[in-house]
Image 1 (tube, rainbow, N blue to C red):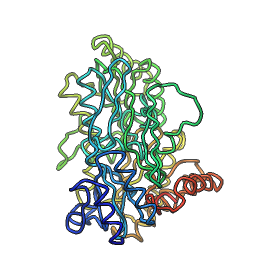
Image 2: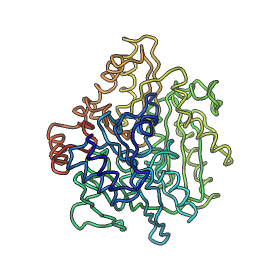
Image 3: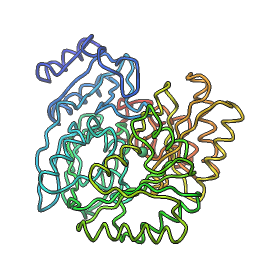
Image 4: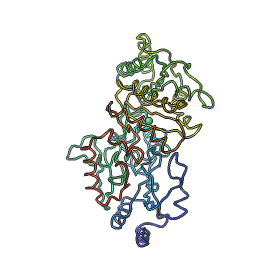
Length: 459
Ligand code: ZN
């Protein structure tokens, strides 16, 4: 970066907004990354106007820009290089408005997911996006990656919760598209350009988000299931029987369940080991007594139909939290060294065969591999966590081919909810055809002709 650009940035922003040297390189590079942040400079604007000023200067200078939210992504989508400028939205952390009648929130992009959840809760509302990194992940990052998480089956992904967006284009033009209505078909839905495009088309600075009425009841069960066909049938059964109340259907293959319920994991088996599949089922509604009765009856008819091998239903808040703690103790997969983490989508009918195919291929090459499978079955989204051989790039690439290869034939996706970043870039062609990728490139060239926004990510 040239000295003139640095001086221009300092002149355009307030004191404390432009960091260099140790103030940059002492920061962590990202979640589950051991190295430090590599970048020439880090700027921390406070307003959309400041972001616009930064991008105007960077566009004129041809300076690459990597936007940072909470850095909780898993696909190296926010990795920076020593020549990059990092644009951190950490000081744009104001919740500007909550309107309980319209049921919307207006917030800056640097607000954490948890902060918005808590603010909505104070108004007896809920912001239903939820994921393990809620305390650090930001709304801007949630939008830029179209985050998913645990309750997508009921509320959809981040895309379904964003009503309006304010963003800054690569050349510094501000696009304020802060729509506040659920329905607005007046032309192109421009916010979609920025949702899920991983910071390559613009910088999201403010959002209008849809809030929901806060559920009054929560029922949770952990269910053991004797076979995959029954697991798939149980999903349909519970969804139908709960009349729209189903909020989570989190499947765990045997190996994952045993990992997170055996010391040194903190949880103990709520349902005994020995079954091939386990699933955490959750329902939320408006009437605790009636909803619990309906939930119990739905499980009972599932049992009578042979879909349930064993089950435990939580009877208190503490027990509900304990069942969720089993599913949420995902970090157990890293207790003996960093594994390879995958996030794929595929139709439910193909899941059982797919997992068996991957396991067989792994066993043939790495007989002592470990493979833990769990995920959001109702969304067709599985997470595979694999330890095989040495944790080096060559092994990783070998494992990637085994995991992603079968998805082409199945019609699955190499990224269900984590995005593409750098990690899945070589495999984008498995899930997108040449015309789709060319149209993505056309959009990228049109919005960022000098290729300064998160260059090299996605494709
Ligand atoms: Zn997930």
